[in-house]
Length: 120
Image (cartoon, rainbow, N blue to C red; front, side):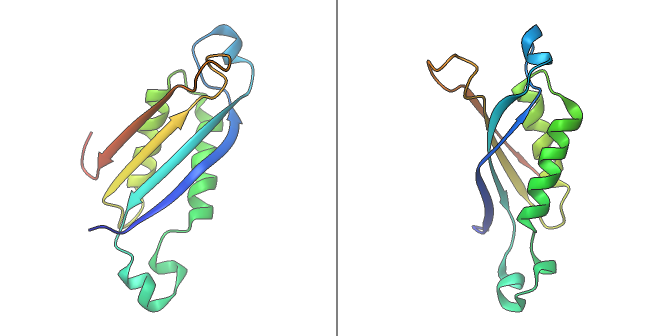
C-alpha cells in the first residue's frame, strides 16, 4: 500500500521536558504525522466517513499532549503513534516530533518513530 495521509508542521504549545522550568512553562512543539491507509474507497465515494478526518486527528493529538504533559519526546511520539494506529484502517503511523527552542536556537532536536499496527 502506498496511500497515506500526512499532517505537516502541526505547531502548538504544551508542557514537555524533564527540566524544572519545562514542567511549568509552555513551549512550542512541531509534529509531522503520517498514516498509511487505503484511500481507494474514499476516492471513489467522496465520503469523509470512508477516510480519516485530519481535523479530528489534529484535535485528538493536541488533547493527548495537553492531558499527558510528557517528560520525554520519545514517550510522546510512541503514544501519538498508538493513538493514530487506533483509527480504523490505519496500518502504519509515523511521528516526527521537534522542540525548536530546546537548544536555545543552536539547532532543533527531533525524534521520529514509525510503528505498524500490532507492534508494541
